[in-house]
Amino acid sequence: MHTPEGKQPYVVPRELADDEQPAIVAGFWRLLEALEAVQNESPLVGLRISSLNSSNAILDNDPIGLSSWLAERLNGTELDNLHVMRGDFLGQQHGDVLTPIRTGFRGVLVGNMGYSAEEANGAIATGQLNAVAFGNAFLANPDLPERFRRGAPLQDPDPATYYTTGPAGYTDSPFLEPA
Ligand SMILES: Cc1cc2nc3c(=O)[nH]c(=O)nc-3n(C[C@H](O)[C@H](O)[C@H](O)COP(=O)(O)O)c2cc1C
Image (cartoon, rainbow, N blue to C red; front, top):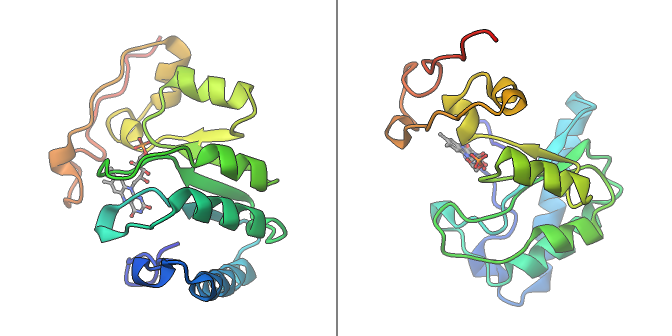
């Protein structure tokens, strides 16, 4: 969820999370309020959680426990899907958040971060996930599903273009030749 300013609301700021269950519960209520407001505008709402991700200086003292706690409580919120970023952009926090979330959450679970087509298919086949989302790979491969279908090589995204304006790195990557 993004605020109108484009900033992300953090459910549990680290300074409040240290063994302070009330702060976690308060954060959860804030999340539910925001969810309800969005659901009032659209019946199809997915929620993304990135509990391992330490970007923007977010570090939780128990990201796995928090994920597990949250997953169970999100049952009954009529989410279209719960989307989980499985890792940390900055590589500071490690662990398996997907397993406890899969155990606790009964709805549609989408995972992402660094999946290959093969790994994604495996995660779906075993039931760990219902779907996998692709970000970086789509930036450089506008025809990503077709490349997966054909087993064609993927083009590498250029991180120097991230968060820049203009088409470079976003819409200027070539498509495959028609088969
Ligand atoms: C240019 C760029 C901008 C991103 N912006 C956001 C964002 O605003 N909010 C967010 O939660 N994740 C953001 N992400 C993270 C992606 O949603 C995704 O979790 C991450 O790239 C890992 O998945 P991937 O390996 O499929 O790309 C961004 C990623 C990139 C490359």
